[in-house]
Image (cartoon, rainbow, N blue to C red; front, side, top):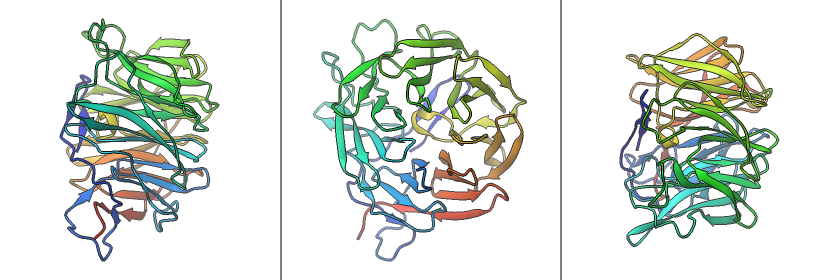
Length: 380
């Protein structure tokens, strides 16, 4: 169920099993059926009160910050996934912790319906289920799926990648990827395959990366900012790298990129105008993991100065935590044979949660593992 992306920007994907629409057992709980039927945690995110949301392909589960106890009933995820796809459904949590978005695909005859379901946290109340295809675009191929999804801080806007595009589209970068108003599902703007989408802290802008032209040249991305309501350009700067971005604290954008197969670059840009503030010495190892859309897991502490990324080397996977001044804080070694899908910092910056074959939470000050969970399909 992994998707990986190398320095050339090429994505590699493996088939994903269809969704079993029942709640998953958590941990080695008595009453679970086949204990080999383990499913990975796809995404992790913290709410402002410290609740840890763990997303799998069959449920959204809510825990205390250390992953010790489940605090609310699980919320079944949306719809039926289809194969082949990279990671099945994709997920996002609003910065205020009140809203979750699940982008998914559901087979309909020889085509699929791409949609995004919006639910309240922690109740699971359905807010909207938005069809993200735009007529008269032809039905999307069954081999494709909804891509990354981003929610505005208050959960009132959602941006979703969608590979559907007109037959005569001049570039493979033209697509139905769009921003929608959550309340009524109205499409606000779109038309380009924007990668690493993330809303600004005040919700007024959407930041992303974009591969200009037809994609036949080097994988050098632009860092772009668009008005969240209209899509009007606010700035576009050439990053000069094939990388991934996210929002950091203090009005900063953090980015990582494939410097070479055995080293990763990282740096900081201004969210005001896209100015490159600083690039730092390379991190040993190549960007790795199996985050949605084949991107390496990257996260920052929204209220502080910490960021983290997953890399790999001959000894296995590791998570490097650094400050936005470039100082390396800690490196966490991942168990051999495991994978990492996503990273999240707790609101106070003391904990880091990792999604993968298991969900794990570490204390940053000493690297101690403080919580771990295994997820499985079905309750028997």
